[in-house]
Image (cartoon, rainbow, N blue to C red; front, side, top):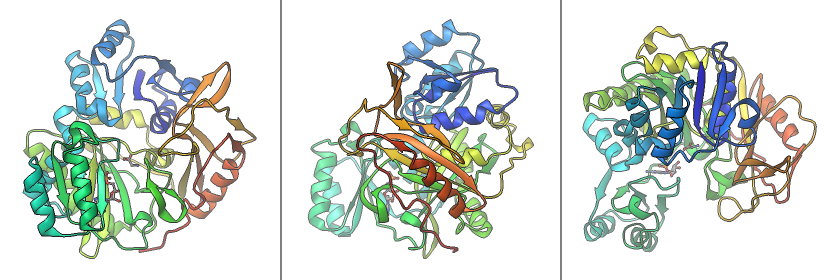
Length: 426
Ligand code: AMP
Ligand code: GLY
């Protein structure tokens, strides 16, 4: 089969690497891809946010049998619907199902209606009513722009002055554009402290009826060591989470995962693809922090290397709604990913700096924001490379990952030194 993966980051490179292992895969393509994807796939220089341009390319390339759409915005815009209307087979939710991520108020209403545990919240399109509610609730309080906002639309406000300022930024100043037409005002949840960032990511394959969890993963969202600094797309991950026990998984499957998949089906918008549950363990059990309608980045980079089952087999079983027929198997041990980022990320950073890579052993390099310029490997984004290593346990994997990271350098490169360092058994 010839498979096209849509997206350009580390997540897409990791998916391509996993697909490459399938004996049934003939050629791989990546739209638009990076310098790493170019090594195992044909990069396609078409803007995937331009549905007409994508359709034109697809018409010209009937040899491509299968499409994997991974980033949130083309999913929210309905790229899967477009491809399916051309008779193409895809992995990824359609526009109606992707709403579980692209509209936080939709997700909150779904959880309220079906009794899925999450933080208490109210949604508002009227600034005056939102302000009145915020004042009534008091600080600390969480404000969320309803739509997609590059992961930046969540504001945790410790004081009332901050809350009023943030509400104005979202609803009146439109800092996040139309994503702020509606605001979700949410209570601040308190997680149990032994979990880094107090959160667990559980990614699941689902065909709309059957749902099968992957191994759990833990992201490190803040830019600096000790969970300090600004929120980022994710600075590193490990999997599985030792503190996420089989009993925890059973609880989450029973109270959150299966009810969500059933709710989406009951609403007439069955979700097919990878459904990502961002979870916080509170003193009242696990609650949903957020849903994503896609693979996480950099969670995918530590989950897929542990997958023993053929990824293309799973993808097709999801598309054909026969996921119940497939057994998904995982390696023992652990996997760690350290994100190497450009200096200044997540605010302002340079592109085009040459990357020097020494001798790498015991780890795999996954590319995110990289490009080739005159034959040289250069930086081309905030998160640039992911160093991924597997080991008997997290400690072994993290030593291998950091040893490989020390072989890589460019001007201003930064990374956290504590990925996988802080974890405890629950
Ligand atoms: P999101 O973009 O929804 O993933 O939110 C970004 C981050 O904000 C999450 O990963 C949490 O760390 C934090 N967060 C979001 N909602 C809440 C909440 N209700 N209580 C505490 N932290 C939250
Ligand atoms: N790593 C978090 C995300 O992909 O949204």
